[in-house]
Image (cartoon, rainbow, N blue to C red; front, side, top):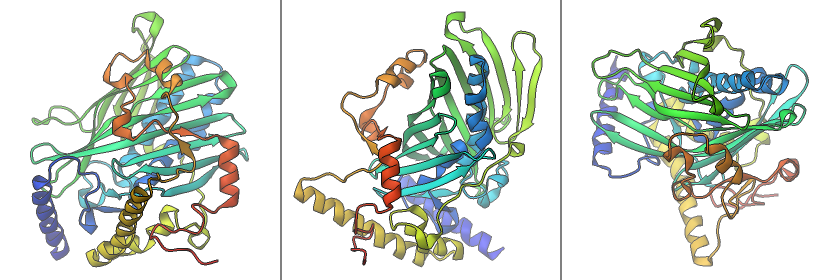
Length: 413
């Protein structure tokens, strides 16, 4: 009881502080009990955690069904994205254990791992922090055996209002490529709202409309709706439809339910139920990562291990001291780069001149003009994966930024 009251007191003080800050809040440090023991660079791993589902489009002959599988994987990944600490505790009534603020990643931070398929194939995960101000994370997942990949980037803009809570606008996109069918799917991202701050019982809602535009001509439109002020709508609700752009928006499939609970898929032509499932029942494949002692200092879990210890112990002093070691060093590195007139070298992603032709072609089918733009100023660029062969050469070497560490120290050996 005493700990709960202390947490609530800290939260109220934190909210008063947020109310005094103008502009983007993405890099604010929250109290330890609000922090997730994971970095923001770990979140994109959820795109392929339902690994068999992630691979299924490559094995499906029908383009409408492929579009449906891409949509299903996206919807099933949402709970794991939002509830970064414990996705099993994501029913909206999780109190102060369900919704946690991920650690702010530093420029150059990496999160690397593999998903091992039941068929012996492997999906490689590469996440890299491309920018700290604004915070931008890029990610790629690729499975060479099945010829399927997912790559994209997202910037987060965080705002706070005493009445509406914290809102995290996700700016960016993901492109899923299916080489077997020479097909690609452009996915935009919803806005995340954290509510219940004034009561200390935090829960998440997703808001707005996002789209998945497929090169086959199918378009998924996903509308998110949370519980309103009067409580008329069910929490975490969504309705999605898949239509073909040449068929005047007529739905082929409909999906309805709650993104953190149960979803129902129906055939729009005859109303027949095709699937009804709980997202928690969709099998998850654990990500395989190197042991901590084998990781580079630039990898998330190695870099933040002492901060995570402080979060676990509820010790704000450890959290602040260990975060300051990295963050102060990062500020010094940025100042040194500015004096030298150089830019931090990115490893696995580049910012090509001329934007993305693939994005422009796929975005044409999206009816929302705002979602058709790249917003380069807000994402620090248009981040494109360097390719499998160059990436695997870097991974094989395993040495990133040579002997330099995120704390500014020079690694021995």
